[in-house]
Length: 123
Image 1 (cartoon, rainbow, N blue to C red):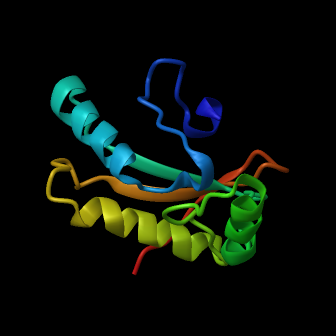
Image 2 (tube, rainbow, N blue to C red):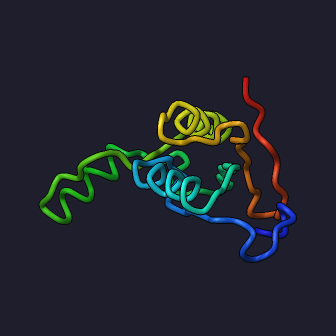
C-alpha cells in the first residue's frame, strides 16, 4: 500500500488495527509518534471489504458470550457507511487535545480489488 501514497518503506509510521478504529491506543501511538518522532501528518486509511463493515455487533457479541461464557466489553467498531466512518475517525483525531499536529489530518479509502486509493471529502 505504500506505493499508493508514493511512499517508500520506512517513510511512514504505520498503525494498524481491525476496522481502522481511532482507539485510545491509536491516540497514544499518534501522540508518541508526533512528540518523539516528529511526525506531522495523519493519514487514516480504511479499506473496502472490511470485516466490520455491516457487522451485526449484537449478534457477534452474543455469539462470543455463548461460546466463551464471558460478556465482551466495549464495541467492535461496526459501521455501515465507510466514508462516514472515515469522517468520524478524522473528527476523533481532530478533537483529541493530546495530538499536536492537526493541520494535516486526512482520510482515505483503499479499494482492495483495484489497488486504488481515494480521499474522503470532509464537510
